[in-house]
Length: 259
Image (cartoon, rainbow, N blue to C red):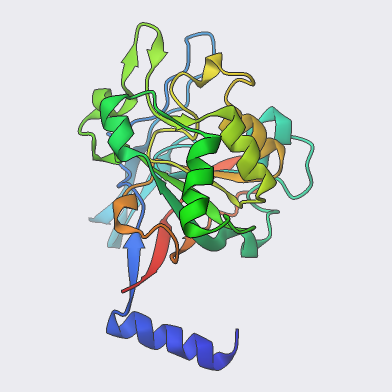
């Protein structure tokens, strides 16, 4: 990109013709964390302890110690997060090239169907229908699934767990395979994880993790404000913490949208 293009971007950000849309959920001790069956180790939510706050421990400064799992709140899944991506090169948050954190966004909206059926899945046919209207999903794009799930209030409604496990929308395995063929950067969702609530029963189980991470691609979970993005044209920036050997990280996901 030439300096003139960068200057134009800076001007557009300054005058509001390019808007920065925050796709990130607030992160607090109340932020829901994915719940696994009791036989598996749980991931902790966020906890914070004050180190000092303008007192004897630090008279002029305030800061905290934070404890949380890598995949808490709005977060990034690196390929090493799933066993299928464990042996890939550049598969951790510190080794992924930084250029791969930025890409165009393709937003597919299935929110109307999700309002009728919490277990709605994005299918191959949905992708083909979207592409017939908007063009093929380009290589290096983020595929964001709008479900309006982020508008649910409260932990129980967001996790939506029943006796048979959680119920939430996600991807059909065939759709994930097609997205891998399109060479997307990764997929992003509004739910607590990139897979549907009932994805343990799919073939393969948890396809958004199994196929995306297994093919060196990424996941973004617990996004919000996808209703403020156009189907195409936005640029998404999702840069995780540069954790050595990190499997993921809480992330501040930003979208640049032309107004």
